[in-house]
Structure formats: structure tokens, C-alpha cells
Length: 146
Image 1 (cartoon, rainbow, N blue to C red):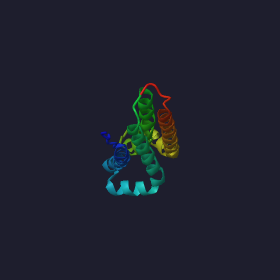
Image 2 (image 1 turned 45 degrees about the vertical axis):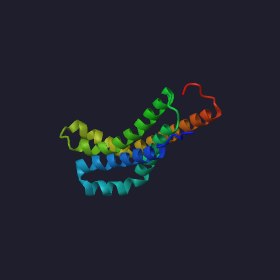
Image 3 (image 1 turned 90 degrees about the vertical axis):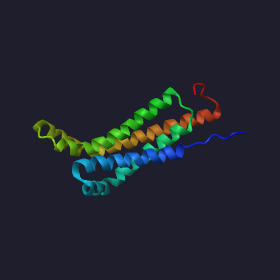
């Protein structure tokens, strides 16, 4: 009997780490590495759960048989996690643009930063719950399309 190697934990850890690297990279590119670290320290309680949730989703995704439904769930909820991170960072990018109308967008993004993080974390929880439910159905033999 040949055992199939499951790298789902590795993929989850890599995904979460890459999301953190993405965050630090974007902020560092526009504001400098020292600022990125200071910003991370002030927002770690939002950023870390987003990265952990994203990593868990990716790990769970690779631990199950893929179906179109699960691929869509992970793409959607994972995209929202990444989008929340981008929304958090994007006001740095927008501040560099000398267009007056765009500066208002930066103010909007900063004002609602907590909301973006909250939405990202909620969608992580939804995605994780849906994948776990799917995994339980697979164990019971209910899923026919995987």
C-alpha cells in the first residue's frame, strides 16, 4: 500500500506567510521598510488573523478533493482576504498620486480600514466553515462530485 504524501499544512503555512510578505513588501515599497514594520506592529491584530485564516483555507483546500464549488469558495474568500490586505495598504499608493480627487479615496480607505479587515476576517471564517463542512461530507460519503 502506497501512502500519498499530503502537503496541505506546508501549503497553508506558505500561503499565510506569503500574504504577510506581500503586506510588508507593498508597504515597504511605498513607505520604506521601517515604516512597514511600525505599521505592522500597530495593525498586527488584524493582519495576523487575516494571514492565518488565509493559510488555513489554503491548507484545508489542499487536504480535500477539489470540486468546482470548493475552488470557487477558496478563490472568493481568499480573494477577499487578499483584497482586505490590499485595501489596507492602498492608501499608501494613492497618497503618492498628485490627483486631488484620488486623495479623497485615500481618506476613505483609511477611515474604513477596520471595516475592510473585519470583512476579510469574516470571509475567512465563512470559507473555513464551508470547507470543513465539505470535508465532513466527504468523510461520510455524501459528496458525489469530487
